[in-house]
Image (cartoon, rainbow, N blue to C red; front, top):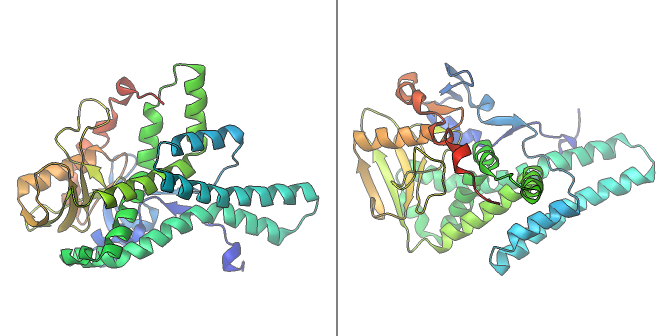
Length: 332
């Protein structure tokens, strides 16, 4: 048996398995759509997961410059955080390079380096999940006042930002719309694809900070669903349900109502609009159907529910928002 610190994590979730299990009715098994469009009932351990999804890649000078270029669009203090994390990852790369040049062979060192490359980023996400766990548990029990504690709000918004940006759905959506019409655009797009593991963490950090500092201007609400239609979730669990989001064309929205189902009965929303004032609100069936449809439309493969009947009506919407992506390419 390998020591725990030498075990490279292979199966890596881009949506937290413990979160998905909230649709399991006390078990780890949920109902979900498969890649072939069928319905299945199985463990969350096989959903929204990819082999070595967070494994870091070797960064050359061009990759690093692209990262720094995007980082420079951020406030100074966030740039400092970006560069600090980048430095930590580059140290792994440097150690591996020194080992390779040494000409020695040591199985334990090689296992340790592999574990560092596979586990470092996932461990960061696991830390954010752990800090958000008590907040999500309280919200699931309709205790919105948990967020009156600023530390809880900061940890939840940090987790929230990362959960938007860390998914395969988000990554593939971004990669699909990058313009590749010139040699420079192709070079930047290829560099973004190669460095996405880091860029996604950087963007998640920025998103979380923006949500936290803007918390007084946005409306944070808890939505309670006592209708016959339960909330569902997906491989992109946080989605923009603002009316400005087009279901005809893949374009950056001007505003955001960020909706996050927490259980089949409870959801959280951060509104630019005035649709839900801050506080607790009961929603009607029409609203639940609307939000479930938008969750499915912004999913790529998986929608998840606590029964097959909960997801069946929404299977037809899966991926709808991405179908027009090639017509809405964005510049890098």
